[in-house]
Length: 328
Ligand SMILES: [Zn+2]
Image (cartoon, rainbow, N blue to C red):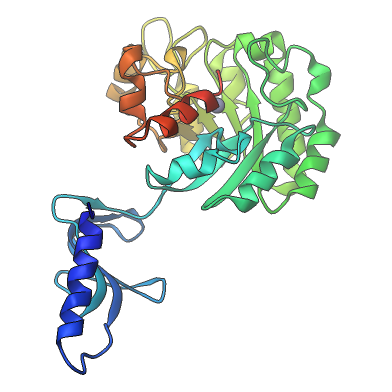
């Protein structure tokens, strides 16, 4: 069985073969009739896209001309590659390949590893089939789950984190600190201060994972600068973004105003709940970004998790995705 793309390609080849002196195709690939969404230029319209020499050479309503290959994209969305800013894809060399099937052409491993083990993640980032980057965990061990990597504050070693950034400066784009009570307990604020200290000489952002925090959200947000990221933004309490009456703390909107970014961070069940999502969005707090946390466990019921999360029909790919899941 040939798929549609092969069929179109072979149809084109047959056509050229039957016409003597057929001139060479103008384009290598023509994507016809899709709904093209490109936020970088404010475009959301039905367009054709022509590609030649590995580059997009035309985006127009109706592109005439020959192409070696054509794709009928009517009824489909055609968009630039997606960037998932909170994954754990770098933990395994199989990880990046799994993202390709979902249109993810750029990923960030968000703190799977710290100074002790980041070099392995950096190698995966450098060799993956798409653009890969990593956040170094302020805890030298990286994620420890269950247990929590910041219960021993000695693990949050600024000098070691800076050394890790210096030797992997090409792929490390920030510092990660997981601040949940079950990860950091009462060490949350000091761990975040150290994360900022590690990032400062390199002018890098810090991403914090929040949810059921020991310290109040206002104390946590006070330590964030422009460009820093709050992932799992809709995590329910304790010490989430809403007060006891369901009203957003003023510090949340103030943080957004000064350039702190809020990321959905799919994660697991205690990383968001719909009650928090509805109350926060009604008050205007929508996400800046949607990331996946490389997780399939926020879907229910369990029997449908694999089918829904792995759009690939490949069962082995689905199993790999599940085995790669990093617990909260
Ligand atoms: Zn994560």
